[in-house]
Length: 117
Ligand code: FES
Image (cartoon, rainbow, N blue to C red; front, side):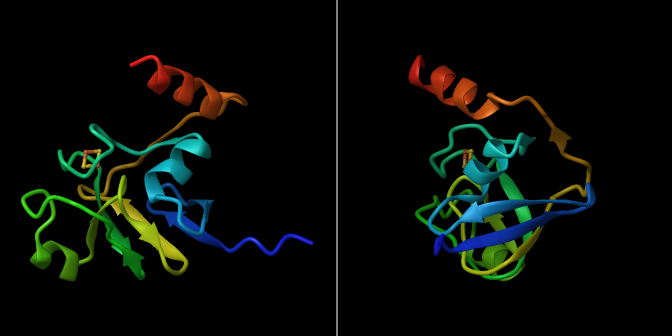
């Protein structure tokens, strides 16, 4: 029996969902599912991964310059740092669609690439 806690993240306006494990960032879960959310530094310092989120998240350690308290209160987070605390709805700030990549070994490819940086 699998007792692992997971959360469902629904991506608007694409209309697709993906699963995020407890403690996993939204960005990591999306990339693992082949969903290419915008991102840059992956360390909370550039703001490229800022998204709109509906639901509770742990914002993680982020630069206050990249994500202000007012933005947090208005429903924004940095996907490379934010960890879901419940099921979420997310969207890009401009409301545009997100590129979805479907090939089996995307995740292993991604981490091989990161390991070589
Ligand atoms: S990717 Fe740079 S802040 Fe998230």
